[in-house]
Image 1: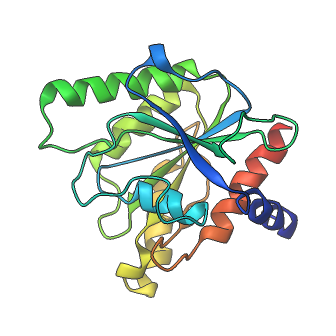
Image 2: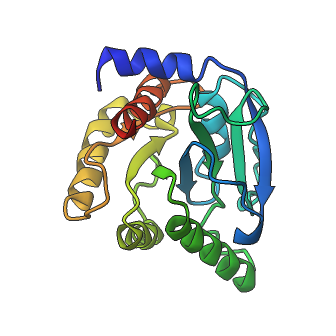
Length: 218
């Protein structure tokens, strides 16, 4: 990632961003305008907080202390206007949290089906950022989601969350262990980002990474 990407990322998210729509199934997805960047992760991993920090807002994505609150695909776009693919070809997607054991089995199956169909059905989906709680590391359910994205040939990258809640000396070994686990996965991007939404750590790198993905596609 270059300084140019970081500056482009800063400008990209200096714009006003707003909630566009939420959809519980594929039948109600918005049109594929521009490019999409999605965020996935286990329930209560901090997805909504990270998205809010990314766009410099406190209330765009709904946060909750109750795991599994995000039950739809939620779409966000700049300025609350129609996406202009010439000026800012980007839509953010907050995917339903996965791995919440207390959720009813039927609901878990519905979320899993929605994620699977979304991954396979969005030709304009550039990358999925898979959030992993730095306090807990990878879990078996994360590997299941990686398998889905490998099969769907969707590029994904792991983002550690809540690094302010672990010792700084733990970050590098954790990143190294995750990169090792991803070595043979064909769709995984071979770099792990580390963030703290509460302290805005790693946001510059994440914004730059998204800008780089867009630049490589354009």
